[in-house]
Image 1 (cartoon, rainbow over the protein chains, first blue to last red):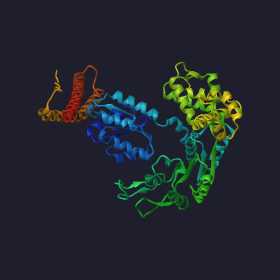
Image 2 (tube, rainbow over the protein chains, first blue to last red):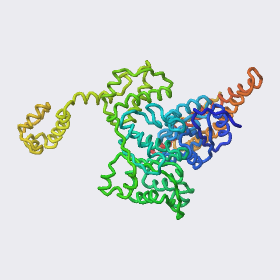
Image 3 (cartoon, each protein chain N blue to C red):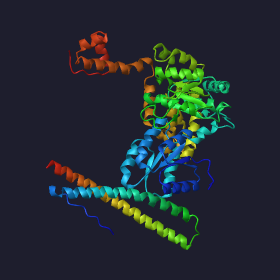
Image 4 (spheres, each protein chain N blue to C red):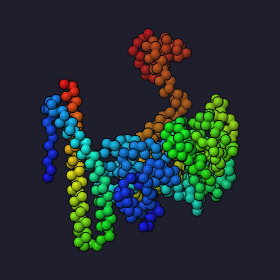
Length: 459
Length: 102
């Protein structure tokens, strides 16, 4: 039987080996407008996740719940997992929560409770509204380009570059500090490509995957090729066929794996682990890093030939502190996003809050801004975001920056810390300390007076 | 109303065998609770689904609501039984540990 499905609702995947449980949950969720998939094994569930990582997993297989969590973690995706358990197995459910499950429910459970947890879990999935501009249609809205937000000259240059390279096969190397939006730009390149946007966009966080499994994750494996390879499994390159693949933290690749990647880039072919059959793929590769790859090449940690092969087109994404003119539009974007998600009606951000945020240095870049705005939206009570809704860390750094107005002032604190450290090392002996610090005793005494350091010895 | 009795902690070594049996019963109970919870959960949901298809004030609706109330009672009983089985398991473990120390 087909039920009307609401496009806004997240997909739910039911993992259960109990016929009645599966059927009853399926019917209930379908009638509540969800699109539901069914699975009866961990392997089938993983295949579903690879196909669509943006779904919520509801499982009553408490015995395999922990195993499922481990396997899902290996995929690099983080779908919310809800465990249905019974009174007798609450300990297992709690253990699952510690390991990253979203929540657990004790059977028998009322339907509205399940719906409520699913709704909460939906909010944890990367918001659909962020993705919406990335789908075909009219991607360019004023200040928003394929989901990217900003109007600063630096960002406009990136938009222009994405436009120019979109319909080519060129490999792209994205440079940028953590949280600057490298993934969003990779997605924008994928979505702007007429040939590939309907095909998969596969992201691999190379730094997050253990070295032992990364090869099989990327290239796949055949059954029996190593302990634990119980089935043939497609790698990410195969899954990305026809589409785009983002290799995040490319600098974390081992030298051995770099050779294999170079071959994929040059020949577009590879072999699964434990197989001799050569496979050909058509994948556009985008690599990203926050490290200086040239330096890694000089230090022998990164292959020079791979570096040049990856660096056909390189895009450097500026940190947020260098494009503060985009702060307002980014804040507006996140405020409306999280207001909608949290059913809030935020009308404004106070001028004082804007000033504080503008003076902040944003070490965590856009990701940090997003988290701070999400927090502010959740905590706000009067529909206007003011300074009380901001975390302490912001005030600390703003105050610090005001106090340390000059270079001389900025250097005072580390100087004081170093003097204290040396004094401790030499047991408070000022002669020895002065000698270690490379200054005469008079200078040291002046510094001690300046920093109000009281030494308990007069040696 | 079911009353559950908890064995006294003041046992001696000759009671150890009996305690082991009681502990075993506790664990079996937890297994049964687990096995019953699944079907009860499914039945409850099927009743909810059926309730949406029957007319208001009909006798079918009345029977279904009665069934739901019975399921709530079974659920409460399972919860109590689980609490008792856990308590039993814990106490027997403590007694066994103390006996070993003796």
